[in-house]
Length: 325
Ligand code: F6P
Image (cartoon, rainbow, N blue to C red; front, side):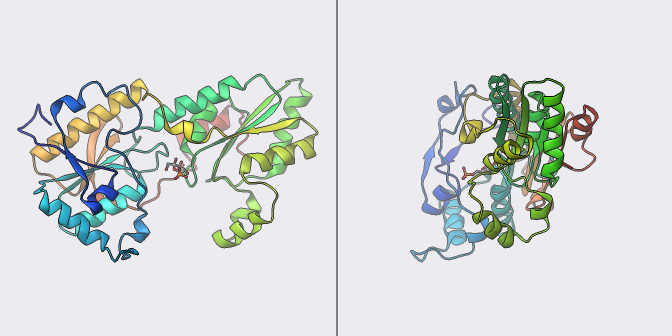
C-alpha cells in the first residue's frame, strides 16, 4: 500500500477480538520488512465464532457495536480482514453494517467460495505431504489431515504423497472398500499402504445421520479420532498391522511455501489497489491466473466442498486411488 498511495496502516491485534476490545497498534513501514519468510501472524489471532457475533457477551458487550466503535474511533477508511469462512461471514456482516471492508482468503482448508486457492493452503499441502513421505516405509499407516467439511488438503497431499486410499468429508466411505484396497496391496506383496483421511471424513452409515445423531453415535465408540478408528477396523478386517498418525496443528505452522508467498503478495497488492480505488465490500480471489475480487455478500457462508467432477479428484480416481466409495 505504501508504494501505491500515502497509506497509514493500523494493525488490529488478535483479529476481531482486538476490534471488539479496541486493541491496536500503529504500524510502520519497517514492521513489514523481513516477514515474508515467517509463518504465523505478527498481530495475533483469536477465535470469534460468527454465530456469536450478534450475541451480547457475559460482560454485556455488544460485539458488533464495539467493532463499529473501534472503526469509527480510529477513523479508518477501510478494514482489511484475513481469514477463512468465519472471518468472511463477519466481514460481510460489518460491510452490511456500513463499514468499508476488504477480505483476503487465508486458510489451509481452501474452502472460500469464488477463489481457486486460498493462501496457506499450499504450505499446508507441502507439510502434510512431507508427513506422508516420512512415514512411507512402515506398515499400513492411516494419516489424519485437517479439514472438517472440505477435503482439499487431504486430496492434494494424498495425491502428492502417493496415498493408496484418500478419504474426504465429501465422499462417504465404505470401510469394506478401504479394506479391499489394503488387502489387494498386501496380496501383491506391497509391504505398506498409506491412507490419507480428512478429520471430517465419515462412513456411509454416518453420512445418513443428522449431525447430533452422528456425534452421539461416535461418543459410543472407543476412538477419539477417525484415523484411530480406521486403523483398528483395518487391523481387524485385513489382519495387517495398521497404525494412525495425526500431525494436527503442525499443518498450520512454519515458513510459507514459495507458492503462498507469491499468492499472498499478489492478493495483498490487489487489496491495496482496491483501497486506492475505494472499492469495498469485496474479497480478493484467484481465478485461473488472474487476481480478481468477489462481492462479500456473494461468497460469505457459501460452502466450497471438493466437487464430484474436480479435476484433481478425477486424476486420483484415474490413478486407481481408492476414494472409499
Ligand atoms: O480452519 C482451519 C482449521 O485448521 C481446520 O482445518 C480445522 O478443522 C480447524 O481449523 C481446527 O481448529 P482449532 O485449531 O481451533 O481446533
